[in-house]
Image 1 (cartoon, helix red, strand yellow):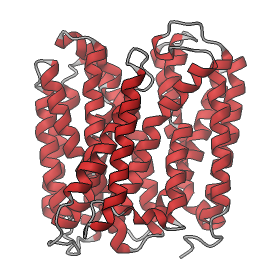
Image 2 (image 1 turned 45 degrees about the vertical axis):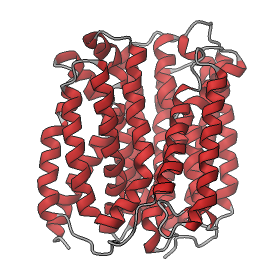
Image 3 (image 1 turned 90 degrees about the horizontal axis):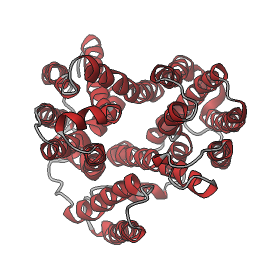
Image 4 (image 1 turned 60 degrees about the vertical axis):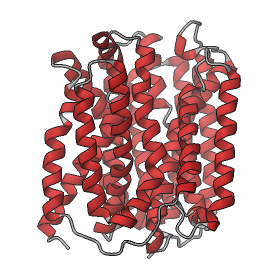
Length: 460
């Protein structure tokens, strides 16, 4: 085990890698027009480079648990980081859209191993899981916002290629520290065989599912194609459910979902993301196109939520100690639901300063909730199930976030707006307030799950 001094250095380094992964997942979004212009391609086609990265991450995430059990955390982290650096460099050197999409696919593949293994390493390095989740929550909230701001600065004053090149010195520095100081855990299973059936069925289902989440609200893609993708994903999941018990070492132990303490936590993770995360994607669009706010005011609004998250990191541990996991989960969800209702009414008489205040409060409530929820998911499972717990937690979070935009887009569609992302119709306050009210109902429903948890859950 590394010394305390080196442990802090290792944590700093793996935090940098964690930020790199999340940074790259969001960095291309705000600069797509610039990249498309340089590569002489339609921005819509270039969107595939963003989608490919996310889909490959989702596809190979189930493998990360097996990989860390088979090779150990340190070896897996080194392997994935080397691949991430190589294909990040090649993405920056791409001369056409085909190259960029291929290299982004491979970059996302290695990111699928890195991000989950880093979370697992942080859980094993620290005894205080609340402290670990506070750090992870803060990093996971800050990185996407930083990705948007930094990539915009690179594209404006240098080149969009630096979005990828910046990973090289950071990655090499992290690699050196991990090679020298990262502790080597010996509790991995050298004899475990790879579950090919599980990978092809579960991985295929997840990849198909995430692709569907990226196209479901695009009106010019035939409905029959979307339904077909949904059926394929459902059938692949069904095959995995029927076969995973026959595998000695399944790629993912979904038997954890039968646990009476773990299952409600996963439901809270998934549906809370579904009800909240659409705000961060659709609202800058609303402010920019409907309210005529400039890009700076939109970016200021987006940085208010991390302020609340930082406050939750500073106070969250103490709050949990005083009120317990159960009460923190319940009141965080209740507070988020009330804030969603307030947001829905703000639409009818929009006030920028009031909206910023609400966003800070949402950040605080969301950060506190994720802090308690994330820690509890790891606390209630036995140590030998941590790999599967880690993978299921990440996948449930990804599924909720992926379908959050679809959630809001479908509500816009059914209320009034037939093509929200095309901006071809007049948008009314009713259309934009309705998702807030429906999100509040989802959050209030989750309060019921939280209040039914055992009174002393996570107390030890």
